[in-house]
Length: 339
Image 1: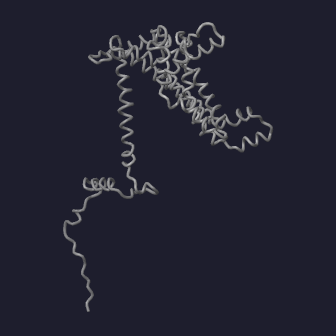
Image 2 (image 1 turned 135 degrees about the vertical axis):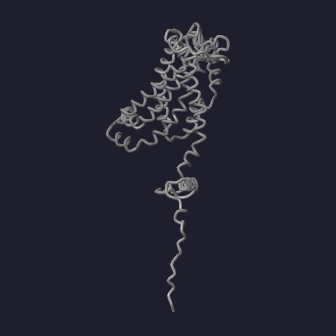
């Protein structure tokens, strides 16, 4: 019996038919394997079944929305700030830096900037502290505490316009507050809450605080849940009172939440509009004395007859830079606190 010693027959040219690495067919084949589902080369864990393009596929709707409703309007505003565009459209001519020089020489712009900064300087510290005190009060598990939590949160659910109308009724010359004070013989003449420029501004701040207390109370309630109870118990055993435990245990434990609340409140204070509009009338107080930067942007940039969209865009850029500076300052303080 003769063993089969036949060898595979090599066909001339067969080796040349195989694609050389780096050639077009090989690159196309690798691209096809990358698009097909299956383990990725060199991956481990969950990445075995995830291709490089899959995360981009899931985030694509959010990226598109951010580009359409965020990036494009910002770039368009930046371009318009160098033109004399009109609110209703039409030909817009390039005017260079004239809108910015006009803004720096405009006393109404500086008045609106003063009002916005004053609004932030008063509202932000109060909004950081008062919701924390409120959260400490409602944190305890007492009978009926859920009712008080819901009651404090109710203003958050109400529309800003509805709340503004309610405060108009309360603060009017013949409103509930003035009527009650007059009947109690505490005042003789009505307090001009809605006609004095300073009282309008402070009343608007009160409205902002009243509406935001419940919202930021939720932030602090979540942060207070992470403060160890053992620290309070140990401090109480050492004789520390409630006020001392609050400043030395509660406040350091919720410091990050305080930074977040301060940043969000500061940005919101610079963008305030509805409160001034509802309490100070569409003119922004007597002679426009209570106009904030958003209010001023509406007046100078969106008026269909006398508005200048280019100048309004320049003021919008200034508001953006002011808000960005406040945000960077808050981040700097947060990093210093962490270090």
